[in-house]
Length: 249
Image (cartoon, rainbow, N blue to C red; front, side, top):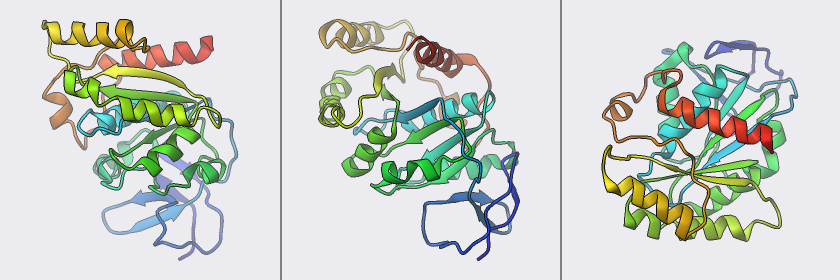
């Protein structure tokens, strides 16, 4: 199959000519209702943020966080979301959004992503990586690819107790790459002690930096799958905080 100029999710990009292995999950997937196109961005750009959304525990809201933040970044500058989760939830979400999606997508769940990152992110300013639970080799590659790591975590004792493997994996790679690390409280019930106690435990007891903004437990984040994330609101506050921290660094 030959690559050609295509429009993918509202962004026009001329692709490079050449043979492409459509069985490989290492190229930009461009979905339409009738066919599948594949192209590779051909402009090399300097990306400002490579943000990995990680937590080895499942059910913490990683994909929701990745898609919302990628949408927010995509409204600012050219942004690429890398779906590194074999479950491909982010890929399905983007497919359902179609041309309204404000960012581009690559589906790449290979454990050597960090070795090919320069080619994969060519032409983009910001990169967000959605990682799977449990797949340490994939998460390790994402950590090695990142300038920033955001760890979504629910405010429960079980979730806090299961945070250790993720932190240990990140720490084991510190000599190779030392990204900034922040935690994001998700699925927070309003007006309860749970969120306050979780933040106090993470910040005071464990000494971890926690984003000031929190993501509440809302049905909208469940029913919003496949829809274009709205601008601003809760994840907008998270993104503003991350970008301010990036500028300050």
